[in-house]
Image (tube, rainbow, N blue to C red; front, side, top):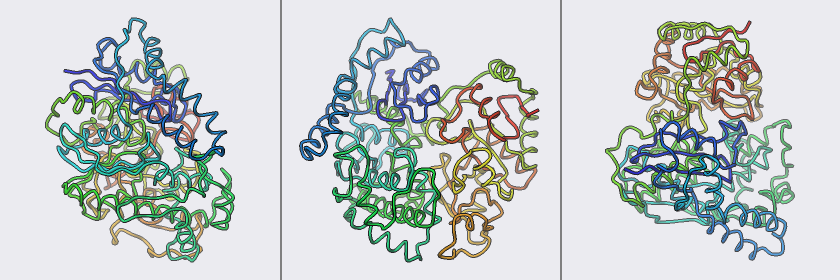
Length: 599
């Protein structure tokens, strides 16, 4: 039996995991403890938690593995500078000393930090797993498949930006790779910057903004035609960038803003400024192209592997719209998306790559998923919760489980918003019913209320439904059911209100006010939703809440959004929950066996 500690750190969204005999027992992002969104620092607190939960001391860890190979990354930085010199001097003088100090000498840095966790820790070999192999292993070895084709796509690892691999129980073989600087992930991030959102954080906002654009508009056609000057898309999914438009090789930003403004005939959007239809059409254009890239990659993967099933990982795999549409193509029998597909999930992949590839240990019979529904973080007992509630001077009552469920469901049916804090915290970017804000999706204007008064974020952002399987099958086209919000699906035609077509010049506000369905709060403007089907196996308590809510309302569907404020990580502990509850207009906090009402 092997105890493996997997670590991702020093870029963004650092995390740690512990696998025992090939089973992930704990995994958590450092941001949840530090309260710094996408925290890149060494995950000291995350490692402490994983050790505490697993009952292991550091000296009982057999293998420590880091999720990428720093020397290969330094090689890329040096070669890139030599190719672009002297233009890249500013980036070179900032990046290379950092890499030499913190990343090339990373073995020492890891050991130093581990000694801070446990001064009795004795130095042992630190292993390194290639970045895209970490992504691939995180998908294949947490999937229900023994064998599968694997696609990984992100900004860039060491050199690789996109890969097609073939996975078996003890091997992952790279068949095709696309290398830096050519990358669909970097292209999407470039548009993220041009549209005024934060790179490596705001890409999902571009995805959410895209449906407000209109494919029938002349402006959309203009933008899509102009985008073709930025890159060349091949039939196998390769994307070759026209580097003159990009700045990431030789500067400190993604794009040459002057050239982009000239190309698209609009100025780059300033962060927090008004969003207009041009921004919507441009978001739709890059989203449409990204879908084409993913479709082409999938067709190529099928052709060269002839596999029945497909696994996806890397930041691009979090584009649930593209993946949802891909699943409808039936290129593969089944598709599995690693729910923490970004760099945080690389910690899991690195650990499992050591277990199954490096050590050659056999996988156990695949189950529905090997991630325990992604509930891999800390839980807190009633005594700890009560201490926090008392500290924040909150009025609370304790209930038995059955009473708690009935009361919460009743409040939700009466259009109250409820913060739901139960069990182990989720791993990955999405709240799945452990650290969630819940609401009735049938309430008029609930999307605007949640966005503006509670989440305090942009009004255009959509919300996802958590639902029972029978309600999913009643309302949606079907085939995209999953428990991780990994895919979108569309409402059935008979469940839609109004006309599917949108006037060419309909603005965001006009589209938001349009009646779309009986579950308005989880129906995006294009009649899509990001799907979470909750089963008793995934989360028995959340399943019971949806069941209780259905007894009252006739529908087992709730809005499920993350329990946090804009710009903050999802809450982790009871103190975080109390602070967020008091800073928002959430009506009720259901935390463990307690219900908290505001005075």
